[in-house]
Length: 190
Image (cartoon, rainbow, N blue to C red; front, side, top):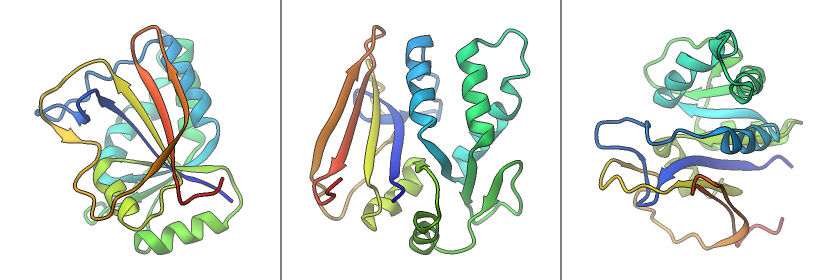
């Protein structure tokens, strides 16, 4: 069955954005971007909230058209453009490309997606992921930790009503000092 993966990049002190809303501290080098590309190739669907969808959709649809783009950027753009995207939003009336607006609530939409054939499904965005965590829908947490302290901003994890015990299934460090940590909830036998 397809896994639901919560994947985000964060600072060492747990923020995915700084206090001004910038994600500028997440500037992956070639080695890290190639790792992201390999992770993304294991999925075929992304689930976004409105804000992260807009950030991603503002850049990736045309990123491969830049003649100066690095090969890993072009590869990621090709992967991202081929993905199905499901967007949860109360305000958007339409989305572009291979995206669609979610038709139902989180639990119903995820149940439908998990029953369909395909690869893994990645949830992006801390606010939306909070709902997935509360509903115990996350099968894997992929946390990319940058060696920087932001002091404040938007946290990757907000207050969680129920404790979630995790098993570390993979870790990898990169020459840039970035660390990738992959965890699975202990209540999943995978």
